[in-house]
Image (tube, rainbow, N blue to C red):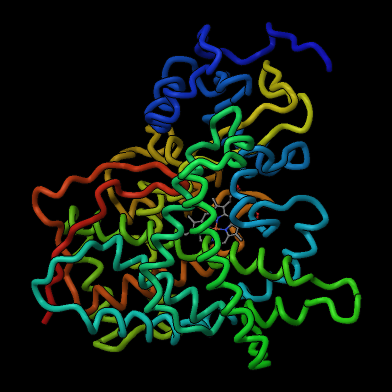
Amino acid sequence: MTAINKSKLPPGPKTKSPLGYLFSYRRDSIGFLKKISKEYGDIVHFKIGNIRVVLLNHPDYIKEVLSTHHKDFVKGRPLKMAKHLLGEGLLTSEGEYHKTHSRIIQPAFHRNMIESYVPAMTNVIAQITNKWQDGMKADMKDEMTKMSIAIAGKVLFDADIEQEAVEISEALDTATSLFGRISLPFSEWLLKVPLPGNKKFYKAKAKLDSIVSRMIKERSVRKLDNGDLISLLLQSQCKNGDAGMSDEQIRDEAITLFLTAFDTTSTALTWAWYLLSQNPEAETALHKEIDIILQGRLPAADDIPQLKYTRMVFGESLRLYPPSYVIPRQALKDFSIDKYIIPRGSIILMSPYLIHHDSRFYAEPEKFNPYAWDKHTGSSSSKYEYFPFSRGPRSCIGEPFAWMQGTVVLAAIAQSWRITHVPGHKVELLPLINLRAKHGMMMTLHRRN
Ligand code: HEM
């Protein structure tokens, strides 16, 4: 092992504790990252156990890692825990394997395919909102989760799973609550011990596996090829020993896409409803646009390019509350950045949350202003100031799907409903795998005339 030149390490807090800053990070990851970047600057080094961690807090540095020198980094250790749930899917795999599978799956996210998903999305929205009543109180986190699960099931697998949405969401919550252990130095070992938490994890994983396997099996029996995700996966299945995907690989890709699709999008939409409820001017502008363009219809694919303000609302919500609030990588070799060296094996953290709230890049970072977002992202020279979907070759494959779903859900619901925040309901951040609202999002549904 080559010795580390400590004088070239980036600055950062130091502690004698063998656990490093494990508990400070686990207690309040966003608060901790904010604090150290304020104290030490845009490149900060600290330790969690014996692992070196480097926070990069400037768009130029982030571009180096995600794009310019992306080959020098892997998802690595931070994604290892996720593999216990997702296997070798697009999110967790690396190298040629990832490239080949990405090429197979990409057509499901082409523009014409995404447009063809709109009627299925609006059907699901109508089914769910038909159960709403004027004046009813609802947890918008639950409503958006149910909706996003049903949309992902219908669009990606042509399966009707709204009835199972609660079970699916609870299983995912149980499975991901264990991911908090990811930062523990001995996390891999912990998962092998028969602790009660681990039993719950494997039970939740089995539940999710069985639902996804059933959706794959049903489609395989129906032999329907409509170009959607599951058609593409089944087409690439290895037959008679050729070089296609195995059943296990198909399962891994299917579960990855299913879970990543609904968890992120439902989180983003929950925050969007909250922000609209706090910003009446934006809410009025949204209603005005929808009333003029849709005139009482549900949105169709042709309407989407005209729903500009609706899209801005979704974009600005993703700025203030990016579901993926931290994007990690691991350095494959010593990496020079500015005047420092990041040693091989270090974990690099890049936080859309921190960058999106930085007054160096946004004039009024805490203000919800969809017009400002549009102006800024439209004219910005550095795209890395806004990266809720990451950037570079490993950015989100589902981004066009998310923009479409975000716009369609906001437009279809805001056309008939005004949604206000229940007074006194506490709103706090819960940074788990995604940036959730800790106490859910209790809101009142008012039917619009
Ligand atoms: C608002 C919604 C969404 C957000 C904020 C989001 C965010 C992200 C981010 C930040 C990454 C990169 C992670 C990294 O670099 O380590 C990512 C990757 C990924 N996302 Fe999304 N995502 C969203 C919606 C979706 C949807 C709807 C799908 C699928 C239908 C999806 C599927 C994936 C997959 C498969 C990857 C891995 C891509 C790869 O590594 O090649 N995401 N997402």
